[in-house]
Image (cartoon, rainbow, N blue to C red; front, side, top):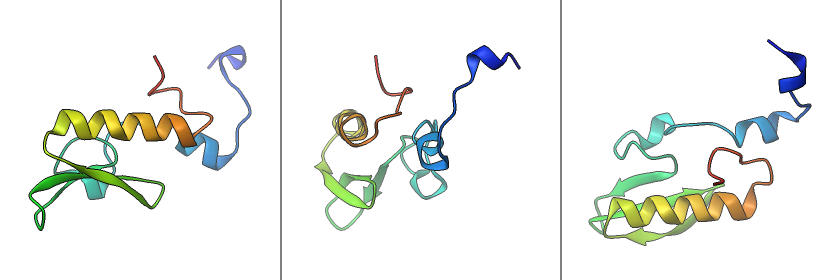
Length: 80
């Protein structure tokens, strides 16, 4: 580990850089996106908020990334 590659962050800021899906979102393989069978659409959740329902996984993933970039200040993984 090279200390110059590290930065001091809180636990919450560190969680913003979590990569991959959470255990509850394993149906899609995309973080914050899961299948909602009642509407037959993909649903996006970011920070306990429902962002929306989408017909395609690609649309849902884009919406999840956009919302995470909006609300998380240390979200380096989703930034281009």
